[in-house]
Image (tube, rainbow over the protein chains, first blue to last red):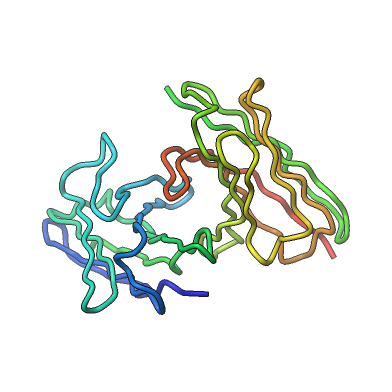
Length: 111
Length: 117
């Protein structure tokens, strides 16, 4: 079974750019799509990135996703940070043996 | 507008059973894979189970395999999660979600399951 490892927390100032990493423990990060979900306090999750770098309609282009095969990791980058971006962010992927795996989540503080 | 609405959560004793329901509207339900994801209090998201669009294929997390059964009724735009032999560690908010086999498009608001010991 593989794991997805995320930093426990990150913080940045409004207007700045932050990147959240998601490192896959085994198997290639490029073999299966990575998704990113945002969960604001007290709310259900919402999808902000699917299929590595695709944004659902309604998600601002300040959110972007990428894959780095050299580090076997995915990244979520949020530019022009707003206080409303403060939330927990989870990456998710899969393989044939593990239908779905979530990362442990990263708490983003915008201060 | 797409809506995904869970119901059936509540308090149950350890070893007991509970059936969650999830009704979806505003989408072509029979085209979507459906998922259950849970979140223990103060913890992260954990995938529980998924069912394909016609209901013929299901997958489960190891932690619930053999105890939980996921089914769907496309005529009613509803899925069900039958949870048996419940344990304290099953206590969580259970989210129903609609999407594909690899991603979620729509999430429900969640229903709380509390297993008392």
